[in-house]
Image: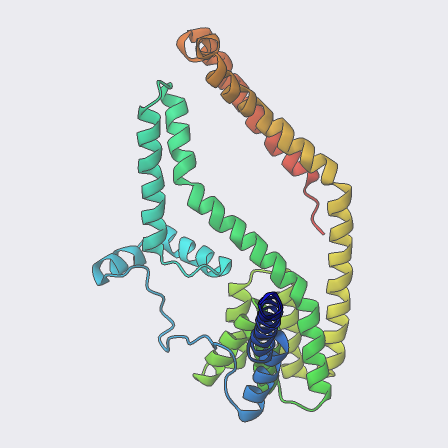
Length: 325
């Protein structure tokens, strides 16, 4: 009886291990990186548009709201177009209406929290404004991270285009290859440019639209080099290789500058956040000790002066540690 029981346990363990290995091998063969790469190349060879090609409107209009009345109202406002451009550059699939509703919801939540605490009016207004601007700060952070990722991918894209041109591909075909082979988010931008060309947009306008969606100086250099070569002629593959070498050198120098200025940036963060952290801790531990800052007229003056000095110091440190290359 014991032998049969232990034999059953051993065979059950072996069956579970083999089942897990079989599921793993099936997943790798169908959804792994190698399988996805082979599928992309098969789509490219068959003439399809590749993975999830973005479709653009022939009218090239972006809706700012779900309803027509809201969309027409937001289309008339200049700041709504700026918000839409910011969302587009950040790669966030939000409408302007959704962004404004999120900001309004954060402001209402901040007003509710401020009413629960006996804070002075300037501090309460500052908290409400901070909460209302939180979605904007998050979108701007996403924009910065996406642009940094695009800037890192530009040298590889330039080399890829140069190799494809040396292989004899046409430039329009090169755009399709780049959109299918390169990783996101740069491949999506090239697919959008390819889609615009398929809709009948001239090549120069499609490249200018891509440069407006990606406000990077290196990409503008790439677009200008392509357009000048199409007007005057020349070896575009060699030009793109030189541009990729220049971009890599600039990115290497920028990385060295970030390393050397890391101490200054950390000092700026500590000096900027330390007064607020200490003030918040004192409010939680001993509110009566700190309440003189907003109950006494002299304390209010000191609080305003200190806030102005902190803002000036943070702006000055930001100007000092920011080095443009």
